[in-house]
Amino acid sequence: MLKILKYSFYDLMRSRWSYVYFGFYLLLGVVLLFLNNDLSKAVITLMNVIIVLVPLIGTIFGVMYYYNSKEFTELLLAQPLKRSSIFLGQYLGVAISLSMSLILGLGIPFVFYGLFMSNAIWDFSLLLITGTFLTLIFTALAFNIALSNENRIKGFGYAILLWLFLAIIYDGIFLMSLILFADYPLDKLSLIGTMLNPIDLSRTLILLKLDISALLGYTGAVFKQFFGTNFGLIISFSALTLWVVLPVLRIAVKARKKDF
Amino acid sequence: MIKIKDLYKKFGKNEVLSGLNLEIGEGGIFAVLGPNGSGKTTLIKCLLGMVIPNKGEISVLGKNIKSGSGYRHKIDYLPQIANFPNNLRVKELITMIKDLRGKTDLDQELISLFKLEPFLDKKLGNLSGGTKQKVNLVLTFMFDSPLVILDEPTSGLDPISLLRLKKLIQAEKDKGKTILITSHIMSFVEEISDEIVFLLEGKIYFKGTITELKDKTKQPDFEHAIASILTENHA
Image 1 (tube, each protein chain N blue to C red):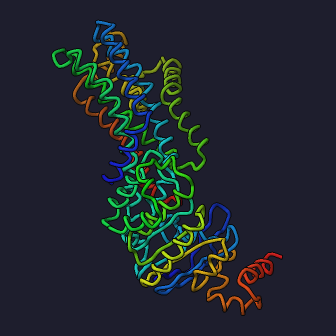
Image 2: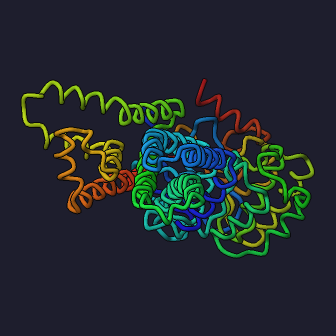
Image 3: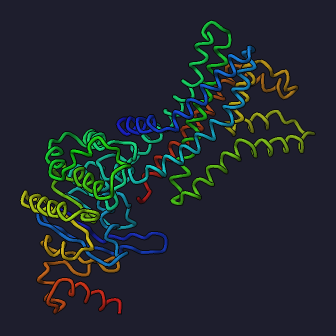
């Protein structure tokens, strides 16, 4: 698996898109930090961008990479390699190179800004950690979609729909249900609802870390009580990990049964 | 060498292989023939474990292929359409496959046989179809495996390369290897193969030498013998 990972990674490191992605974050980081002197505001803006963009790029790149390397995958399948290691290797290759673009692209300007001496280092690390989690999650989901759909157009369609659902529609439904059932106690429901969507979960984690939960009113207090504690932090990271592990397992299972 | 028992494979509603039985002994060149859609590629992909059969058993060199991927160390496979990652250079691809399968020194010999030296530093995306096929051939033959499977090996090759390929296949046969070939070019098949396996509607219709086939169909030459099978069964 490590060999496949190595080659997928090299292959992606050479593609123009990795650099575009890296350059975008570099630019974003530089602009936000050096043209705007408020660090916590910069982190919030970054969060808003990351929360939406990272899942989108992860999904699109994952689907694109799978379909583009289809013939090459067939070449690998005829070699004495285990199927699961071929696909997991490719998956990790994509996910790691995307995460690298993110971490380096944002990390470099922050290092120059003097991050290590500022208090924001924890907020910033949390931002990068959740960004990496989101990359891992959405690339895995993209591979799942691509493995289940022979037709590229369909695969792309489902991938975009998935992103749209988790990034936007889910929130809408969530909000509507909160308004609709406003007469009932909703703290548990909203906690669970947040847990079930990795994008919401990441957003909540970062917002609460930034100590602006007062803005969220009563719900914010409930959330703070839950996510602010170590227990809540552990639970939410476990939820994120589960979001990575389950799709990855399905990649392995699906790959074993598929015809090429 | 290869034993296939009662092989069934369906793609959706389309039954491609329906109870195929085949035994192939050690040594010699076997041509797998059949009309389009008769299941040649599916059969080969089943052998390689790329397509998973609905029913049936396949063993290669006495080992059931379900018991792991290790048996593929004994198989060299040339896929029908050579499409490689466009970002890689030829040299890197060869190094990479060597890295994945194990060491070999045969690649240098094959590269000079197919005159690929000027292309080693070129990216695979910039190569012509014929050159890609040559790279494909190098990748296939550089491991000295006892079983060689070639899916349309002639596609895109110029006459000189075709001659070299024929010589190469003969040389491999003389080493005692078993070679499976699919091709639609009948003159190539007639010239090179010892035995043919004719697939029709997912079953083996005929297996034997070309002379036997001519006797069976009472046709004077190979091409007409094949044509007569097809017209008899499709008329």
